[in-house]
Image (tube, rainbow, N blue to C red; front, side, top):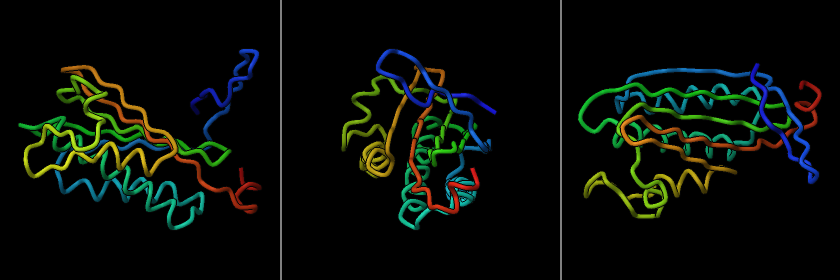
Length: 165
């Protein structure tokens, strides 16, 4: 299991929490795999018994992140997309969508609503949608090396679930 920082105390102490479950899937950057990706992640998160709107939010954010890989990371060829998802005892879900494509030259500009490098058929709303459907969005990228989009969502823990973890 992976150990990640949970909280930082005002005095600088860091508390760590282990994930209770994780998954990893890698697939070709074909548009036909976008629905597969969101379904796999939704199925994994379903073990937390999320509300319908929470599950829809995750499916939508994952769909946008994977679509960005398909359209922008590999504009002229098929590459690999990897999704790693982890669940923590607090109901926190962390999903990383990674590609090894062309990378993003200017992340700040790319995250602005309506900015796109995908041509007239693209609207430039992908990052805005991801941000609005998650509790935290982080994007890291290196030109020529690829991009990692980290989506974080807190699932409401129901009493039955809290006992499970």
